[in-house]
Length: 399
View 1 (cartoon, one colour):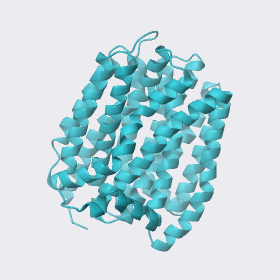
View 2 (view 1 turned 60 degrees about the horizontal axis):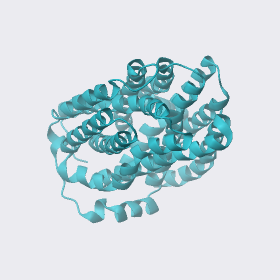
View 3 (view 1 turned 180 degrees about the vertical axis):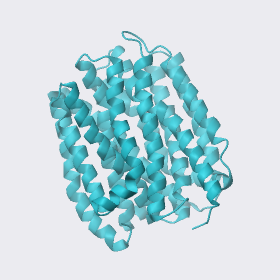
């Protein structure tokens, strides 16, 4: 692995975290703003599910090609370009009222978010190995959780009580611009470009990794389960709470609670993994708390109980995504990381695309109790597959 000057590594890590925190403030504000906006446009559960899913359509198609872009043009350039695309999408949502502007904005923001996240994860994955890498990704995820705490609260405060969305999308555009500005200060390795062949980063290369590397398989499984839970929780918790006649401000607080819990535990990720007995038990613990938190959410009408379930989802989500990134970073070579991270994010966005649609269909059939209950059951079933896969991964020395 290429050595990096410690001072440069710390400086770039701080800038990456700052830029992506702004990005996730925007992303988490949308979690509250878009469902409320859709409901005020008169969207049915299925239409709302389709609108929520559009943000993940372009990332599903372009995640792996964007991995090649990050490798060839450097993390700094792709991060800054992603921020500018995000600004354009948010301005489209603000100035083009109704479904056309909302869908166009969702498409652009989804692509931009993927681009910024992929650039950041690639840069961080090159900064260390083992417990040090766990600490880097733990603190990176902590910063993002901070953005996810602030975002829903801001959205809840900025959204009008009755109609329309006010200036909420303009405020988001400002945060996206700040993220791109921060990215301009990245130096050294963040600007490096690697000449790689398509066979190292293209679709065939990623498919070969999925077939041969148990570490890559495990990383993708962990992110898919974690993102399914977050997709269900983030997309439909605001809808469920609005059906309980809760105000946008209360909705924002409850959505933020999950991120706040994740933020609190992530700095201690390396220590928690050691206490759990390794990465395998830590992942199984995370899946268990996600399953419990999601399963009973739809039959909970009291604020205190919903808050406790949000804490469980926060505990699980606080571990799954950093663990997934660490496992993948150590399972592949540096030249393959951007492409492999792109594949991981493609799976991530695929489940984010499908989860609202599946949940919307279940919601139409049996209400919130059935929809949240079946979602939690799917997460619980993933525990069985995970246990088997960990045995194979342990044999390859990844965990």
